[in-house]
Image (cartoon, rainbow, N blue to C red; front, top):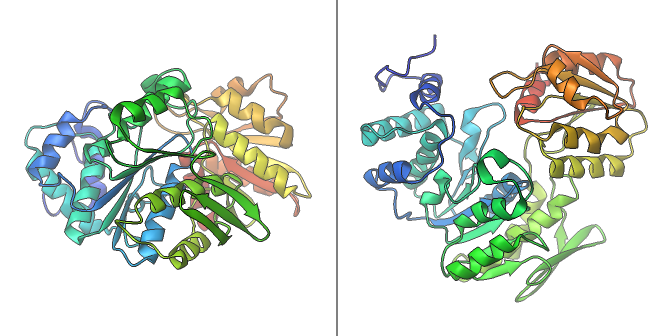
Length: 425
């Protein structure tokens, strides 16, 4: 039975108890702003951070970039902490130390410390998680902490920590209700993670002017793709070109997708910018690139290809990957999406490649049920079948799939998580 928001937390609570209570504690799921969470962090002694901090923002690719950065420093012998969100199957995925997810017991200890420090200060579910990650990183004595921004940047809880170096991946139209209607306004929000005198890596050849203006205003030295660093495929590997020279013969990232080279090039620029402070040998780059794994990112499980993409930019990457794969059979799509995502644009980009789509309803106030999703896809020329939920949609697709068909599961973290539950049974 779920605990009530009015319940008094105790050391005996399980992780499930804590998470259920946090979901009910704050009247809003999202409340952007730093004053509340910063005040609690200061009471906990988390600011200023003792570890070198890398903060990573962007619309797509920030999760894989953060994972690669942490892996590089771990391979180089540094104790590293990685904070990402959202999770796929277990909350513990959000906080990792030296590549190992935090245990239930460790997260519960962190939550109890935060609860004792916050007094009457209201915190959201995400803010609790951010403080827990910082608390555990400090307790473990990590030398490097890599923090993935949850939403935007300027007012995201992660931004209470002053980044020693920041990276911004691509900027697309997502979370427009919170961040603004266009790339310029969204770029302004994401550029809020930049700090004076600290390297700012921009992994776009043509970033929004708002990002460049923010970097100039903050006097943050910019490293920009196509101007200060670049990359190029070379035979079975690739070359990175940076300010101080080239790195040849790098292994391709083990994570599939053409965009992974671009993301990896930005991470290498970030590492290079901190080389005087945190030396990294080339062997560590090779090791981390060759081992890069991230569930739900163009992940192959048997006959299924799973991808958590949920905006137009992610759909373009997925479509490009499908064209590269050139499956011998049909592409059967299992799709579940949230109501505030660009459903029509997402479907339009995939429609030419898909033979049939099986639509699964998603739970919660933002989740689209299958009939509503089908209505929004109407007129795209896509043959659809509405199913009760994602497990039913996946089972229906697998039942109709021929041996050479490919079943693509996408549209949301929630969609992929539900599919993984089915596939792992």
